[in-house]
Length: 119
Image 1 (spheres, rainbow, N blue to C red):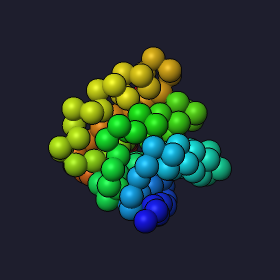
Image 2: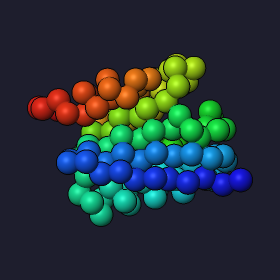
Image 3: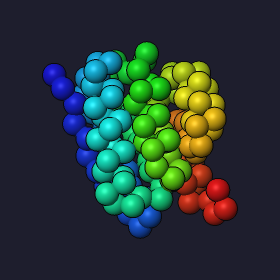
């Protein structure tokens, strides 16, 4: 099985909902696809929903770093609470590389953070 990315655009926010099976190779393709789509749309706020993607532990950094560092936009990653501890490294690395990335277990919290002004 592969993966599918569904894009939904609302105002300045682009949501990329990823479902299916992930491999390490897929992680780079998924990240690049999301980054390219966001760049084409001149997205200022990006929500990446990984809750429906199986097999992402070990490749989380690859999944979220390209969108977080290739664009000048805020990136909120929505994932299940079980993966909370895995996001410390991608968040810190994104900051070092000039990105603005945060993990959320709750969609409303992610959207609230994305809509905050001044960041």
